[in-house]
Picture 1: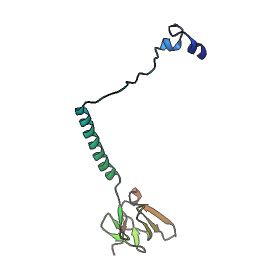
Picture 2: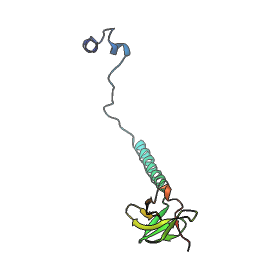
Picture 3: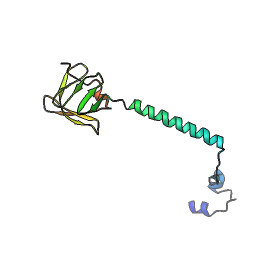
Picture 4: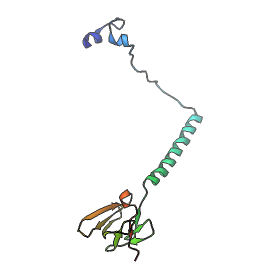
Length: 133
């Protein structure tokens, strides 16, 4: 049936293509924009990029930052290697054993020996702090 349809006369009433009214897509050879339209599209693109970068920043909230070998938590506390890291209720999670500034990650070793990674932008890192004394 496919061969018969492909080889059929285009005006043949029994042609599936003819009955469906299918025609090849027509793409315009060229499309020109006025200078005003180009200016508006450029301005819209600039606004989209600006809003996109702001939204990207807000979505990438950081719950800590790494500065000169120290981890600076949201609450203003800080920790260095060998110091305790706690959750928001000051429950000790473990000791800070490694800092990866390029990856924005820290590694905390718990009392059972388990090492837990924390990424600065991970919700798991929200509320991390150091002991207040």
